[in-house]
Length: 136
Length: 185
Image (cartoon, rainbow over all chains, first blue to last red; front, side, top):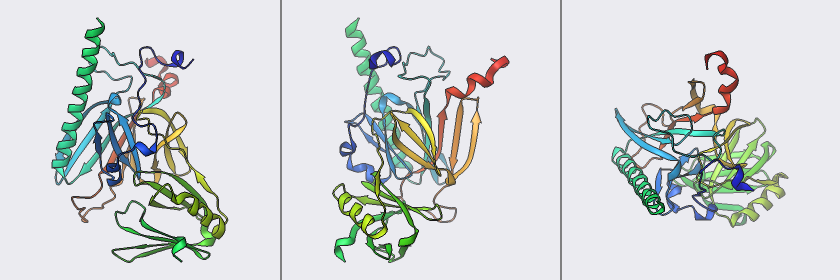
């Protein structure tokens, strides 16, 4: 069945079941952190593209002139992370989105988004850790 | 007249709303603020697509010279009326494009016409217009980056409420290195 095809240890997750579940904020064509769905929605040339927090590694921000740049890094195979690669992948041979960078004149907003992503990531990691401890 | 008109429609990625009207002679969008009109004559309309975009549903129209125009802001209920009008006036079938919202960052890239499409479970998640790619790079054999031409060109300052501008995307493409690596591996 499906389970056999999936990479070892990979647990299924999904942001939205269908288009009707997309939050209204996606319409602004701006990055939106949907905490309830554990998802970051990225605007890409008119598309609203959700990325589940499990796919996200971190976010980094830097200022350059009038603009603030926000880079969102994703979990992909083949990254020399230093520590042992524990992240299981459904299909390690697929093509992965590794990072996406945005710029905005509103540095304050990018500050907030960066913080929201970091917080959501922490929250999810903590929960995972608790689950693991319970299982032990 | 009103029967073939749609209100609060965006043209392209602009943040200005307007009205889109369809008639036997073609289709025309008129902005509410600037009153600018974009018209497409009937004989230039070759195909039409419908899919869920960020600003609700999008109508994408393919033109004779391979250009295309996009209109956002349709609601689901507009589909049937729009499909009927496109058929009636231009003899074009409104084709449905399946978009997925799974939230996965892995899939397949596919060149579709002038776009690079990213498919997850055989459904579209996003498309990037290759025309707007300013630069591309391959790093370490498995990473491909695409840089985009900023939409707000130099000198013309965007407002604080402007959409976020995507300037770069990087893909990890593991399949490409297996054959190339050879002796170096």
